[in-house]
Length: 93
Image (cartoon, rainbow, N blue to C red; front, side, top):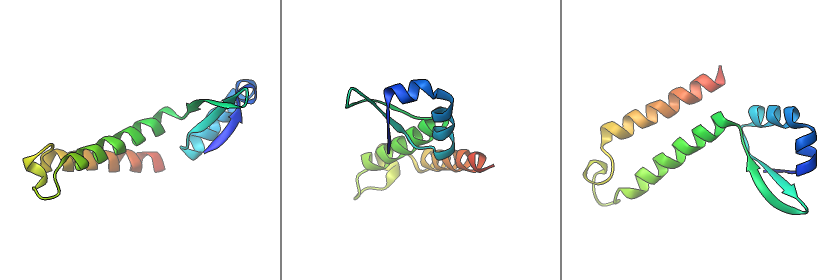
């Protein structure tokens, strides 16, 4: 993750917005020598959140039981994965 001084970020906001957009990676803002904020593109955040939500749903299911018996149904999981794949395909266009 890239670390940027807060002053540099605020003086070059458009540049860092473009950087976040291109890389889809978060940027750490450093103020007075300490990490202050993490900034990332809204689309990248939404994708990351969906991925984390999916991971959480998978972890909620017990490894000994079918996914549909606890937490999330296979149908819901399939829809969720399709949604993530569609979002990823749209981002590559």
